[in-house]
Amino acid sequence: MTALLPPSGSSIVQAAIDGELASLERFITITTQHGLDNTRFSLVHLYVTLKAHPSILIAGPAKTGKIALVHALGQALTEEPAQNCRTMVGHARWASGSRDITKFVELQSRFNDNQILSLQISCSAGAVA
Image 1 (cartoon, rainbow, N blue to C red):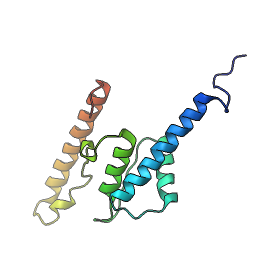
Image 2 (tube, rainbow, N blue to C red; image 1 turned 45 degrees about the vertical axis):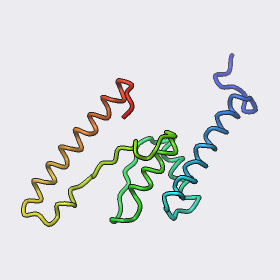
Image 3 (cartoon, rainbow, N blue to C red; image 1 turned 180 degrees about the horizontal axis):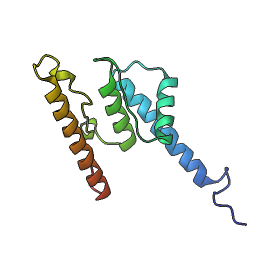
């Protein structure tokens, strides 16, 4: 029976490992450049989790670095500038002072649905999102 994977000592496997380590180090470096104060362990944990489950929901109080973390991760994984990262607001907290917050929550939800659909269409067509 032929093995489906090359032996663990092969140059193909080593090249894959080296590539992952380089991506991880790039993520840690870029995160530091973005001014995020995270432990190396937490960044490695986030990276490995995303490799296993490529969707993530980041939630937390305002001004804690969530958007900067996403930009750093996107920049590290794609080797593209952070400006190429599409950031979406998950909830219409920006409208908390309005008289009809329910309307703005609904509008934000619709906007997010359209953004996600647009991203899916771009990705399936092979376009850069």
